Picture (cartoon, rainbow, N blue to C red):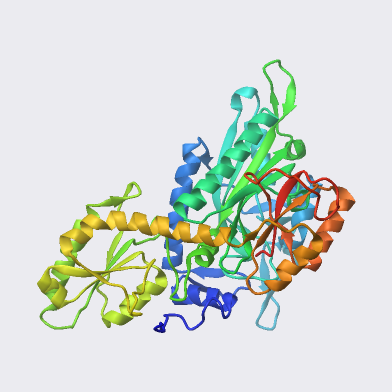
Length: 513
């Protein structure tokens, strides 16, 4: 077998965590900012997030949800009203206590003691409380319901251990907040948002996910039920890629969100919240990346086709650029996934091979190299990022007539999108154990798979209270967590792995990010 010299210095199987960091760096996606836990998202990384925003926003608005914006600073008193909620976020809250700085007399600055705020302000960790305030003003009767809102914003949760895109002190997201007249309507909205996330993850990001309900210990603080989509990374760990929460009436009671029903009686609204964040970018990296860098699904790629003229800085460059511009024009007439193709003609100076590998590391789905000989033959050399190498361990170029490149590009992009999803789905299914029937077997499974663990789908009795706490502690000792109860899992037919009682359902157990 011929050895391949890959574009990255670190392989996934050698050090997955360092490989992840190298992908982000080599693909020029983001960098550390100098502020702990905060990152600078560079144009290629931002372009991917922007595509995610565009596709998700389209799905959100198709459901009749309207975008709005709410303040970054939230009075502490808003959180205190909802005890369970504030307890869940208390350790992560960033607090503003002063509104002015003064000189310390030594060339530095300190908070002015005279500028202390009457009430501390919390830097938004999530917006249930402040949006609840607005809902209490905007909702008066049943005619005002349902109220369906979404905002695109940044939030701050002071993380102790950070990793770019996956867990940062400041991150970007969308957060949906809705109010309904009945529990049935609110639950329907909760599940609608969950299905929207599944469709986005699988159809747009090409990431297969497991949809299901979280156990009680994993619920959003103050929620009555939390549902999630869980994705398997290439190292076998789980990532919670999106959540949807049925909040019952607890937040409505705290914020006094009432409405007059058709009979004239005052009722509390049933509310929901749901969100997906820049963590989805991290998921995309860890699901689709390879030892040559990022592989971006065509739906998410800022540029789906990148044309690289092999410039020689001589008189022939003008004709070559004109040839490539004609190819770009032909590609722009094509469409894929319901949108015009996004095409870049990269005419920057530099060696052709160096520019090619830059775009390989960035994960552009289709790379088309054109040199003087290709131009003379009326062709271009097409490289698909999803299958980079041929049997001779060389880049797998397909020398294709120029007109055919434009005509075939949409189909190739569709094939790449499907191939990435199928690869990830096959990998996940090959790494979910469903035959574990004892705690000892569970321990053995994860002990044997320390570096690249998979998931275990086990039967359990859904214990509550102290019994659940005991089970969670057992898992914590093994560095494991419950993920969710898969909606499409087979019915329970045995005993609970943890309590020995009759099982009522199956639940996923995994190591997780």
